[in-house]
Length: 468
Image 1 (cartoon, helix red, strand yellow):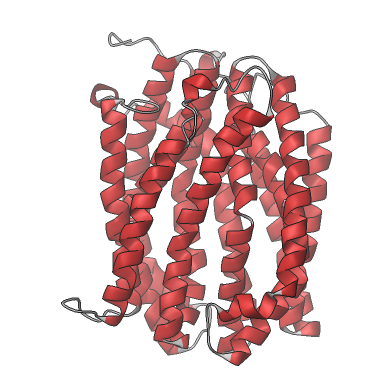
Image 2: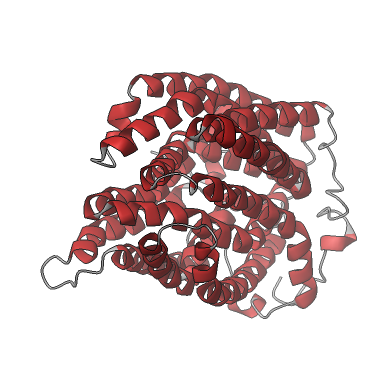
């Protein structure tokens, strides 16, 4: 049984218990989130190789759309965490309410815009026409439903900033169950359901997200768990919206840069055969599953850092960062090495094509041993975000995956073929970890100013409303 937030003080006492309290539900939540991608890949892999390749192209663009929209929710999470740490719950509620309204507006705009550009964007990859057509079908449905997908991530972020990671985990479970049940029914056309193929996977995901978003918003409006939102505080405040944008834009750049690097890698991957493209998609999905503890602990560190910065405890925040980085390096390196021993059976879970299995296993032989380095980098990125240094976190991503990985992949592919692309992951993970450690040890993140946007300073203050 998980403890309530009120029973675990994130700003005093030991570090291990509150960090585990935050991170264990986050790991489960992220595992459940990945179940969406795994379920889609599993069923589409049995529907056809073209559909698996199409998902390989669609996934980075999905990530890109979500990342662009996610900046505001990250900003809201940081503000909620720091206000809660400073014992200013009414300001946390206002920040959450404004985050909801501006995030929904942003997601609607991005989703509609994405609908009209995805086909041209996919065509740039130079993939086979059948693959482009299938990916376009998926992406157009996904773009129109982006507000539901992003809205649920927004709910998770705001609840995490408050310190409640259990409620989002339970609601995510409901969402995944709906998606897993619907996927085979609408992909293959079982019973009364039509056979929709790859479009069915998109419809299943959007429907599941819509149901759980409504549930999440209801919980926040009622104030039963976590941070509360109030309708009276959801009238768009343009000045506050601008503050959210200033803090959240680098977070969008961070996510978008990572998504863009994966997308640009597809230009290089697409130079090779469809089995290699499919192997790349399967390999990156396995990577996303195994590194879930890194993502979860990064998010837990973000919340602990934010609340402790708000409470004026930067040393405690630093200790949480160091502990999480060490744990992830040891554990994920071990898991990565073990994964290389079962690489072929692992890839074979997603496809029956021997060529895809061979290429996917080769991906894991090179990339899996560096999982621990990825964990170190992501831990410190969470700390930077929690301290309000979203630009620093974005810079790490740009350096590791833009400045380093893409050139290495291009050169490596021309010399070594697909193996050169897999090596680019190794180099980027190593460089990212070293830069993150070096920047953290400088101690420059220990600041109450947060790049001029401190919650103690006037830039993020607001006049008290009559409802406070």
